[in-house]
Image 1 (cartoon, helix red, strand yellow):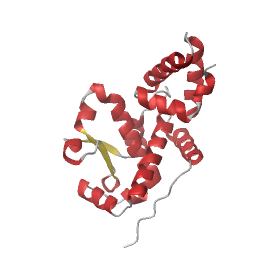
Image 2 (image 1 turned 30 degrees about the horizontal axis):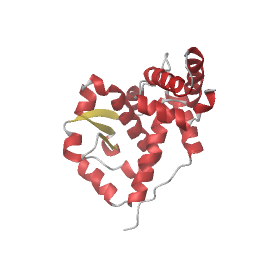
Image 3 (image 1 turned 30 degrees about the vertical axis):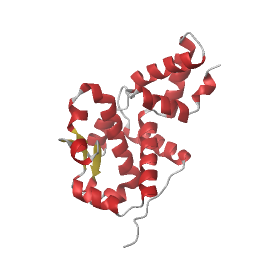
Length: 198
């Protein structure tokens, strides 16, 4: 059986996909933070359902089963406020997979079918799919324009220089966009915002 066709996306294309996606679906009165779970369920019709012990049993925090129009998320992410930011990113990543790789997931209904689909892929394909989905998830949760504008604003407000300024700005950005510090820091690098720090 031939390998499933997996499209790889350049960064510019992922940024454009995020922009189009948000212009269509981010219709909230308060546009930040991006309400990705609401967009998933209300706009995309993809339900988010607790899957007890998903990580413990299968090593996954979430998986996409488009055959059931469902994103399954490990219960500890859904039920623990300490993991709220991680939950949001996991949902965003699965939404990103539905956008970029929906064809692969369209008939998947359960965890066994999910693993069967991935068994047909080469390691480099899986790695690139995850890389592209993570990038798109970041671009959706932290859109370029408001992220850059707020980074500029926060840097101007903060005291210090270099790493101190960067740390303070990233910390504020992570709170504003409801993502982890690490996720906000990666987005800061993706957008080359160190140029804002004199």
